Amino acid sequence: MDMSSYAERREAFVKAMGEGVAIIPAAPQSTRSNDVEYRYRQDNDLLYLTGFPEPSCVCVLSPGHDSERFILFVQPRDREKETWTGKRYGVDGAREVFGADAAYTIDQVRDVLPAHLAETAAVHFAPGRDERMNTLIQGLIDGSRSGRARTGRGVVSLVDPGAILHEMRLHKSTAELDLMRKAVAASARAHAAAIREVRDGSLEYELEALLEYHFRAAGGSGPAYPSIVASGANATILHYTQNDRRMRDGDLVLIDAGAEFDGYCSDVTRTFPVGAGYSPPQRRIYEIVLRAQKEAIATVRPGVSMEDIHHRATEVLVDGLLELGLLSGEAGELIEKGAHTRFYMHRTGHWLGLDVHDVGRYRMDGASRPLEPGMVLTVEPGLYIAEDLEDVSGEYLGIGVRIEDDVLVTEAGHEVLSAAILKEVDDIEAIRREALAAVSA
Image (cartoon, rainbow, N blue to C red; front, side, top):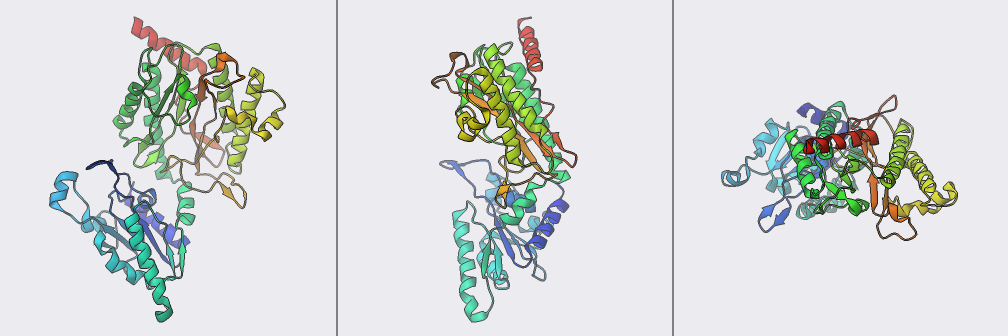
């Protein structure tokens, strides 16, 4: 993303912030085992404001300062360490590449920050995952507070920057949407390959590897979250990630997997047969979920709430469960009592962006917030009939179906970003028949 976009975000943030100083720390580096670290993923708030990708960093926005309005504290250049882990931007790169008014090494936070805190009454800071940095910054804030009685200057209030920043992140710019479209396009290629390549005897992790190959081959950074490849009864486990079962003809496989592109996520689920087609019970469950998803997506437009979307999906699912005899009674009463939650136990969607379950409030003034143009959400109803449920017809036991798309709220209504990924029964079965015929030819 162009550096001017980050500058515009910082300006919008400090304008909304008013007087004060904002302190945004980086995510810590995490150890995988012994001396092996996980691939680094920057804190999304810092990434959103700066684009800076390295650990051991603190962003300070001090709009009242004469010259140092945007400061980055970063790792120093170190030839020996860079030989092992790669080049660092250092203080010069923080200024020249990322546009910082001033840059210091990370060990100078204790020396530089107090002067900025002394000139402000409000600090916008939320502790992150780096406990040592949290302790350091909180100590400096406390020191500024303690000196106020003598000097008349220093911090009075501590404010969560997310109150402003997360609302900004909820509304996507054109540049952000371009990256999300790239992530969705990579996901589309991956899901299409999985639908074609699954075979009787395939292992779930083989499909996982295929999906993640396509994410990376398209230029993405990899999966936006641990890929779910759940076949048979595993599909009734919502966040199944073991991915080690051997799939068989007659199974359904539920794939919940999305690519990440420059930090921006996609989140897509499709459920399809390992064999040539859905069995009659599988098809009945699938078509109920598909109908619920279409109805829920059709409601997406400005002014409609997330609760409205969830309620519409739930109504369609409950009607379908009544048709199949999996529930009995009056639909409204069943929903009010939560009788459907043994088969549908999650919400119908969530915000999507830099986080796969992105930031931003779902409720405002005690009510589910209305949608606005520029928001991106998932719509993902499902039905999960665990294999050990009692009082359920045996033909439905062990069937899990979820269908999920990424939806942009527009001025006119909505756009399904992931619409290219097939989900109609006839289309999926045609691909499966064609794929199996090619193998046997």
